[in-house]
Image (cartoon, rainbow, N blue to C red; front, side, top):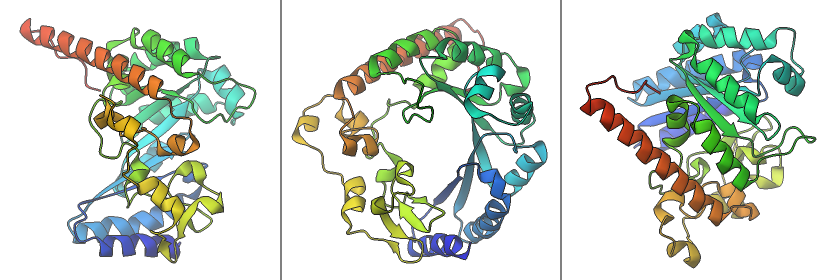
Amino acid sequence: MGDYIGYIKKEIDRNENLKVLRLIFFGGEPLIRLDVIRSISQFVKPYCEERNIKYDGGIVSNGYLFTPDVSIELKKLGIKGAQITLDGFETTYNKFRNPPPNAFKTVLQNIEESAIPIQIRLHALPSNEEEICQLASYLIGIPSIKRHKIKIHRVLDNPYPSVSLFNDNEWLEFKEQACAINERLKTTMTYGDMLKPNYNPCRFCFSRNVALAPDGYIYRCDYNLGIKEKAVGTLKDGINADGDENKAYVSTLIIDECRKCPILPVCHGGICRHEVLLGISSCDYMKNRFKQNLRFHIEIEQKRKRRIQHGSLLPPKI
């Protein structure tokens, strides 16, 4: 525990221009070790306040232990938002996760009674695409869930070896279907999804953004956790800025082919550095994805302006 707090303190102290510190607790299931979240937050929150630094905590959870009382405590600890993932309705949810009895109902109730905002992430696969759309519509219709964000997410790393994933074209086709269901869902899946120019599109390309692992190593990407040859440093010694793995992520070099691309400011040569380094980032997909999002964005804005012109209500908040 002391190593984590020591590393975070050192990073705060060495960055005089730090304005915001964001910590995201994830696992596994991080709420199994609520004591760790509590200890780190009880140091970080007041330490940041003393230095006029905004502390913005977050958590990624399966939602089962995310009871109303826990959400209240997390809010007091500076955790301002949570992400909870669902794979479908109860039968599908149980099939993928093999959870305790009534886990699906428990998670939904915890979401409804949460003291902090939640992003409900719905995992979409070719085998559950219709059900995920139905689940999205169902959740949008629950009054107590309207204050939370609902987003359908493409599964890229397969935790289910026997289940196939969307290829690029299939995912774009699925987005067309999903975005036709509900204006709110369409807005959530479009805004912030590769619309604005990015200096570094991948969050791990920024020199201060890292993943701190239980093994005491520091990684540039959470996909690499546990692969020690991919580590860029240790909690004790800090980041090895001159290491090849670290340079591969924080590099701002752009290949000539990308320099000639008209959407360069948007993807900066690849939205996910992990995929770029593996050579699986598709330029055609990025371009088609950008065009699709841009079309959705224009449609949403046109409808919004028509509502304003006719004195109607604005679209629901996302």
